[in-house]
Image 1: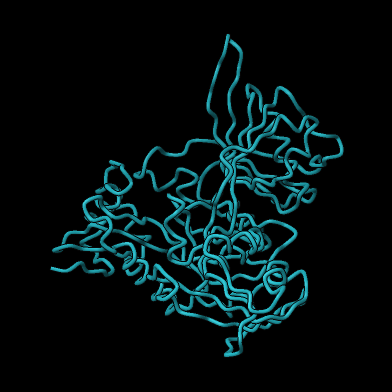
Image 2 (image 1 turned 180 degrees about the vertical axis):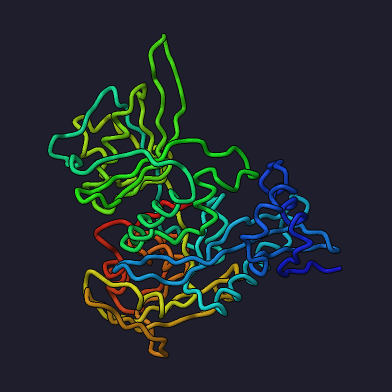
Length: 417
């Protein structure tokens, strides 16, 4: 029997999860996981590659929204759980599953697909580009403090009991924040439950930590931090690490206020802040900037554009310009010959943009993965095109497109999936 690519049935969920855990070298209790995820997953978006009825490859997605420069939101598909069993590598299973999902995403009207790559070289072949950088930050609290002028002294911080009401409280803050942060995405309700250790415990260790909120002078909640402690003692001295799992404030001052609070917790020598950006301004807040170091900086969110005209028109631009961009769009193609070509006439300005499909001669031809990488403004197009090259049909077109797509502030996504 030939390999078949299709979405799974409800009675196949356990076997799909079993195949997933083989691919990710894990051994959780898949029966418990199946019970836990079944109410939350859309199985029409869970793809399987089967061989004689046996599931040997997995991919699944969920619907989200991506905030783009200018703070509009576009419909997107979050891609996860991509595996192929070791017995079936190099047989086109991944290509088939992604091609099926990309076709479905276009039918659903999703402008982009998003993912985090377990291995860097895989996804550019299918049109994804590294669009958002990520890093954790580690601060040696024994060697620094905050500048008096850094702010963060207004408002109050209080602990919040971890329950359903807490979910609603911090989710409201995040929803307001993610709509003004290019690169951030909408989070599923089940993700909030899992992050607070209320649900989703079958996957592994249950999160056990603390939750604080920040209130402004009127008592309104305008920030929160979720954190846990790695307790350490050395020579009978407290050297614990406070790990901030999620921290958001609706203003820069609230953000600093939460950082000040976390840095003041007793018995803590090191503050580690997860899922930030390598260009975070944290060192500039400190009296000793060397006390703060980025940990494992690198690629974060990857972006593939499905509807290129809609994507380019949805965002704003910090400069004005006009050009025709041709993108080589790959779903299952390995080379340029198998890629489709999309030409878009872009009229861009800080006030908005107009992007329409056109038959006009292109000023610039780039790989779709390079365009996806540069779309949110944090990756320079002139760098992204180095992977596969580009064709500049009009002198200066690459520099013009590079300048148009770039943004002053880097995009940031704090949501891992």
